[in-house]
Structure formats: structure tokens, C-alpha cells
Amino acid sequence: MQNVNLKPCPAHGGVLDAPDANGGRLRIPHPIPYQGSKRNLAPAILAYFPENTDTLIEPFAGSAALTLAAAARGLADRYVINDLNKPLMDLWRAIINLPEKLARQYEAIWKAQHGDRRNYYDEIRDEFNATGRPDCLLYLLARCVKASVRYNAKGEFNQSPDNRRMGALPETMRDHIFGASYLLRGKTECCSLDYTKVVAGATADDFIYMDPPYQGVCGERDPRYLKAVLFDEFVETLEMLNHRDIRYMVSYDGRTGDKVHGRKLPENLRLHLIELEAGRSSQATLLGRAEVTVESLYLSPTLAECLRLPRRYRQRHVEQMVLLEAKR
Ligand SMILES: C[S@@+](CC[C@H](N)C(=O)[O-])C[C@H]1O[C@@H](n2cnc3c(N)ncnc32)[C@H](O)[C@@H]1O
Image (tube, rainbow, N blue to C red; front, side, top):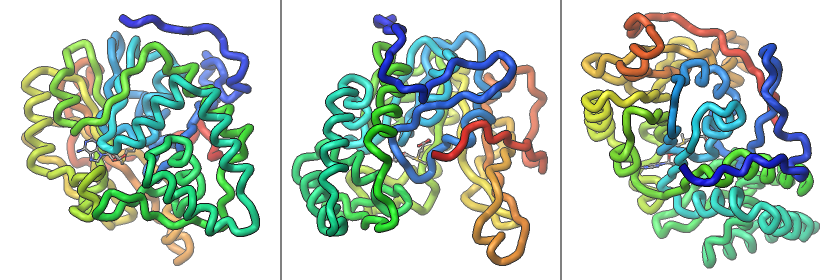
């Protein structure tokens, strides 16, 4: 095991609170704003985290919401975060290993915003596309539409700014950066590989959490960083993990009311299905319908066995999700 630095860090500024034995609220740092983040669902997902986990592997990490929530609870000895998006993983390396430098850089970029914030955003976007600088990416994610990463066919970031968003205040961002660094430094490996390569090295002592991009979202439009995850290849990868008795969980399809999103994973994988209530659909609420969004969480056969869960598949059992974490 690598050196683990667990010294209290005065600069985490209270973003990270100690776990509360009475089921109280944990405030988890979340430095990267990211569309599709599992930040709010993480506490419900972690209810199925197995004991005695050496390494938590997150092959589709994005903002690594589950890894941060697990690290705050000390659930694994080590962590592997991976995402095919290399600049995103460079940003993670900067957050974990160079928090002071990154916090200062973000502050400098943020404070230089002036009256013409639209043009300023474009300048930072050009700088990011020319250099891949992590501080520029952090600013873009803090300011862009829906915190949603979009690249053009040349691999250039081309998402527009949301002119209502200023981006997190520098002091707030500093707290989140230092909080994440405190949790992950000295025990986390960052990589930017295809997920198949990352899961290939998992052992029976590890635990994998997979949250692949929504099917149909990442087509050939974004070939450099957002290669589509093909359904058949994904199913084959899960079969291989089953064969090796690896403990894993997958967030995959879901539904809002009766509308199903994505394709269900096949029954022959012998997965245990949990349905998590992810909140009310704002669109349905606007239309006067009380529809909730439900996300599927699939547990591998070995994990379900470890947790002594009876096999459950395609039943409409919805776990009421407890929103322990407030939105920033
Ligand atoms: C739904 S997001 C994950 C969100 C994450 N759970 C969070 O809390 O922020 C899926 C991620 O998978 C990454 N990705 C897409 N294709 C990939 C691949 N073939 N291998 C690894 N990562 C990939 C995308 O860049 C994206 O960040």
C-alpha cells in the first residue's frame, strides 16, 4: 500500500465533516461540477458497499462523486479513478496533488472575469483547447451550460457558457479542492484509459463502481474523449467480471414515470437489481404530473452473495433515496 497522508488539513475549511455515528450529515467535497454526477445518489449507492475492500475502482469517474463519498467514510484502503477524458484526469491530478496551486489559479481566472464575460469565457476556452490547462477546464466546467462536457470532432471543447453562472466563488472552490485532496492524496491512482483496461486488473479484494455514459449520448461526435460504450462489449465485460467473481455495481438504465431510459442489462448476467428514487422530474412537475425518476443499480452476483441479498430482477421495488447532501 502507498503512503497514506491522514494528517488534518487546516485548509479544507469545513467542507469535510467527520462521519457521524448517528447517521448524521456528511458534507463531501465536490470540486468538479459535472452533468450526471452521482453526488446526490452516492449515500444510497454506498448502502451496498462491501466490507473488506482493498481498492475501489471507478472506471467512469467523471466528478468521482462515489469515490469521494466512499473515501469520506473510509470504505476502502485505496482508490483508482479513471476517465477516458484525459484533461479531466489531469484536472484530478492537480486537485489531489497540487491543491494550493490549482486553487490560486482558479482564483486568478475567476477574478479576471469582467463585464464581457461571454468573450472572457471564449478566451479561456481557446486557452484550454491550445494547452489543456487543468485550471482552465475547471473554470469552463464551473461556467458552462449544465456543467456538461462537449467536444467537437477535432477534440476541442465547444460547450457554450451559461451566462447566469459565475462559477463557484474562489473560497468555495478552494474548500472543495482541499477537501478532495485531503481525502484522496497518497492513496489514489488516476488514469485515462478505456474502462475495459481498468477493470481487467481488478482482484477479488477490490470493488468496482461503473457509471457509463448514457447510451446514445456519446456518439461518434466526440471520438477523442467520449467514445460510445457499446452495449455488447459492456455486457461481455460484465460476463468476464462475473466469471472472475469480482464484486461490482453498475448504474445503467432508469425511468421517469413510465418512460424508460436506456436498455436493460440482460438477465443472464444474474444481476441483482435495486431501483433508487433519484428525485422528481422538473419537466413533469412543470406539466403538472408528479413523476419521479428512478435509476437502476445492478449488483454483481458475487456482491449480492456477500451482502446476502436474495436475487431480485425486474421488480418494481423502489428504494426511497435519502438526500443527505445538499446541493451546492
Ligand atoms: C455518466 S459519466 C460518470 C459520472 C460520474 N459517476 C460522476 O459522479 O460524476 C460517464 C463518464 O464516462 C467517461 N467515459 C466515456 N467513455 C469511456 C470509456 N470508454 N472508458 C472510460 N471512461 C469513459 C466520460 O468521459 C464520462 O465522464
